[in-house]
Each structure stands twice: as structure tokens, then as C-alpha cells.
Length: 288
Ligand code: NAD
Image 1 (cartoon, rainbow, N blue to C red):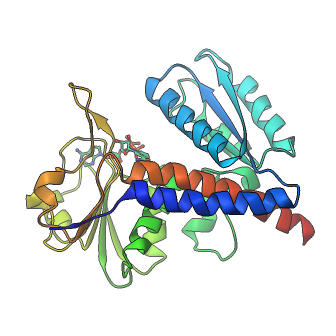
Image 2: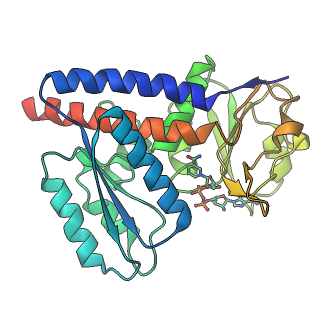
């Protein structure tokens, strides 16, 4: 039976560490700050931003949120980003995805000061990660949280085969870079991938971020693999399920993350961690 990777517990440990770092910053007169931009009425986005705000509040992070109707124009959101870029109280800026059309998410993300890009989606930060540059820069929170989960297992990356299902900017692509940078052989698979099942069955590390309930059953998992389930899907009965058939796969895998209680809480804990990182890095850079 697999080790269950307890994202809730790991997140609690990470949040306690973040709280200690915030206390140390406050002792120096610094309060880390996060600004969240929410556009429209997407129910999931509302839930996510509420959870982020709640956790920031609990940890003593200064937080503000700008809510816009779905009809807001690009220039108005852009002005808000520029205001937060210039605001000394704000270390971290987050635009909750997805944005309603016709807003241009890429252009808005590119307008965020890269030093305040807490989601790690700014092209400069994506490029740093892609090129495995040294130094401090933010990285997409869900993949960074997955690395924390794998590190907690003492996972040995180098020389192993990873398969990542899903190629989004939020999850699959940055995770690909993080794993390649740790000397893994990484295969990205999607809907059009030939021999999909063969790829998955060869994975020592299988990360599933497709948004498709029960996509991966035991027949697609190599015995002894580590399986990370990123998917968040709601069944007709209102139950939260991942992309992996947990009950089937747990007896086969060496380790598996559950949904709920896996990647989700780690993403928020990592967002808080990275807000504090940004608060520290920006001030350190200002002294150079
Ligand atoms: P997305 O829709 O942007 O990307 C999904 C990717 O999966 C695409 O590349 C798509 O081609 C691929 N895909 C979809 N169905 C597939 C299938 N049947 N077979 C193979 N590939 C398939 O989604 P995203 O933003 O990357 O999110 C993916 C899932 O992860 C969603 O369920 C989302 O809710 C969840 N998610 C969870 C967290 C978290 O913190 N736990 C964070 C981000 C996303």
C-alpha cells in the first residue's frame, strides 16, 4: 500500500515556517503584502481567492483584493496592476485565472513587476526557470508545492522517468522545467499523445494535471511509481475528486497524493511562502 502524501499536514508545517519568517520580518518593521485581482463571477475563482485571502490573514500578511465585473476593460485592470507595482506595501501581485474574454491574460501578467510576480507566470521568470538560471525568482506555486511534496518523501529525481499529463502554463509546463532541472527525463503527454498508456506505464513519477476525473486507473501506473494528482473535479453529487482513481492506484503506487488534502493545500501554502520570499528578495536586491 502506498505512502499517502499528506498535503494538509505538509502545508501546516510550511505555514508554521512562513509564520515564523513573517514574525522575523515584522520585528524589522516589514509586513509582507499581497494584492489579488479577481475578475468576473467564476465560482471556483471566488472560492480560491477567498481561501488565499483567509490564509494570508491568518499568517499576518497584509492583503488587498480588487474585484472587477466581467465587463471590465483591459486598461482598467492594467492601471490596477501598475498601482500595485508602485505600492511599497505590496510584495506580491496575483491575477486569478481564468480571465473572461476578451481580457488578455498574457499582457496583464507581463505588466506585473517581475519582482512582485508571486505566481511566477511573468515571461522573465518563466525564462529564468526554463534556463535553470541561478538566483532568486518566483516559480509557479502548484509545481513548486509538488517539489516540496516530493522532497518530503526524499524522492531521488536524477535519472528517473517522469510523465506529466497536461501542458498548461499553470502546472504542466513549469513542472516540466523543475523536473528537467533536477535531471529527470520528462515526457509531457496530452490528449493527442500516441501510445498514451505506454508512456504512463513507464513513469517512475506520474503527475496528472488534466482536469479529467478518474483519467488514471491502476492499469496506467507502474508498480512502485510515485503519483501526484493535481486535478480538482466536482462530481454531480458535489464531491471533490482528482484525476486519479485513488482507491485503485494506492495499492500499486509507492506513494500517492490524495484529493482533497494533497496538492490543493500545498499550492496555497506555497503562495504564502513565495509572498514572504518576494518580500525578502526585493529588499535584499534593493540593498545591492
Ligand atoms: P488546463 O485545462 O489549462 O490544462 C489541462 C491540460 O490537460 C491540457 O494540456 C489538456 O490538453 C490536458 N488534458 C485534458 N484532458 C486530458 C485527457 N483526457 N488526456 C490527456 N490530457 C488531457 O488545466 P490546469 O489549469 O492545468 O488544471 C488541470 C487540473 O488541475 C484541473 O482539474 C485544475 O482544477 C487542477 N488544478 C489544481 C491546482 C491545485 O492547487 N490543486 C492548481 C491548478 C490546477
